[in-house]
Image 1 (spheres, rainbow, N blue to C red):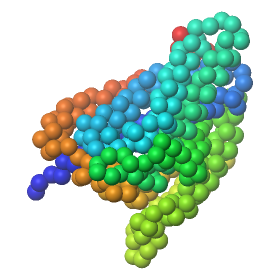
Image 2: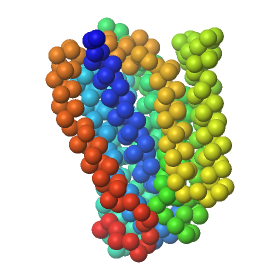
Image 3: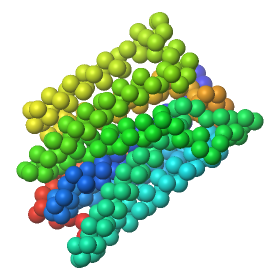
Length: 337
């Protein structure tokens, strides 16, 4: 039996992108929640919950982007010009956010502290918004002619891409609130419960809105979700989303500490599965498949050898760091300086 290297690489890159979304998502969510938490001591605790892991979380963005460039060069060359503006804004926001993350601990002036806090929050919100816009622009389709991008400068900007942008901001806010519930206690944890309820409702509403809009974007989406017998196989996804939304509400009502974060992760996973059902095997909808965009098999084999060696090391290091910094973070816990 011959292995389909292209399919293996598509799964690896899809996994890397998902790991980035959920792992960097909750620390972006911390910045998204900053405007709702005004006290400096609470904001310091919030930042200290992610300080040991936030740099490592972005490793998966590098793996996903680097893998796309190396293994699917046609997709990379097509998507980069199509999404140039939102991708550039996202990277600038991540840089701005990273600088603010460091500088907020390096200034003694209350005015400067407030300014850097605003920068940290703004960078987080803009980065999340741009990531969602890129996703929406990809889903709605990219014009390709003669193996090159044939669209306009602003094709990425549409009501649907703006909707997915705000949906991702809401989802990251939910992950951030769930993380704070898990990692903090007392008054800050109680405020996180309230924020999780609001962002959870917004996330669920956004999932419904995006799901209702997608069948109008493409006949292929309608065929996969609304025709018989395909509907039998895809129906578990929306059913599980509804059940998980109910479980999230119950977990918040019962003041459970770990379940809200896990429910947030579950909603992201189910949304990602739904996205895969809609798009596969397209990597640049509506016409470029993963096999169309893939590099030569010999290059895929060479790159896979290095990935097989390095990926377990990255996973082991990530697991160790999360285990090492387990437990609650309080105002008295030694923090990031």
